[in-house]
Length: 335
Image (tube, rainbow, N blue to C red; front, side):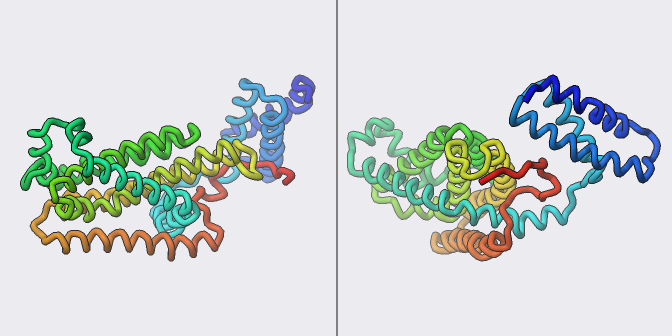
């Protein structure tokens, strides 16, 4: 496509659209119809330029023009409580269900890695001695040691807020950096499993594995599931860069990226629940079986949310993407 010829042929339409958008008075019926037609033409022109002869300056001008025209045609839409309810009842669970193979696989492999690391540390004293000095290891693992007092060393509310913030950051890193072929996600999940494996191994080596699990499981089931979901979604986003399927790579990344942002918001809610459990239930005086039961119930509720509500929403066509009215217009492509 000869860009100069194309611009010369359509510049008058773009200028006329810009003039209509700048009108202070209310448009007449004929002018409104003209604005809609010019908006559709300009959106098509923008798509053709982006795909055939991308020019940064011209693309920027037309993108701004199309955005202004779209706002004028469709009207500005404000978020409401109805949007939040729709997202939590269909969009988020559908996105969880669609990505289940990724995060379930991530969970299984990661858990196996943590268990393997824990076994290796617990059965090799020389590995334990490389982690810390004997006195420090005793301080960590003894009754009333640092592994136990960690959960009660701060006020419950502030501790829950701190845990929530830290875990939300981990989830956000997995989701945001997933586009880099998923490599940063693998590093983040490895670091988390390494920390878990070290705790498993050290406490198991002194015969206190039951105590460690009693402290980890109440909040850890839901917390780790949320981290696995974030990691699996990040890996899926990274794979989209490699294999976008029948969609154009840009369109595929846009769709999966929007869904990933939605996942970040939903996971913040899930991590808030796990943080509350970690702040108030884990250090409580409840017997271990009661604390673990609370953690198991929270995990079961989450899985039902995914596999019942999410499957129903996914079968109804929900993908976790934003509403069609909020997406950029796309040209049809040949399969």
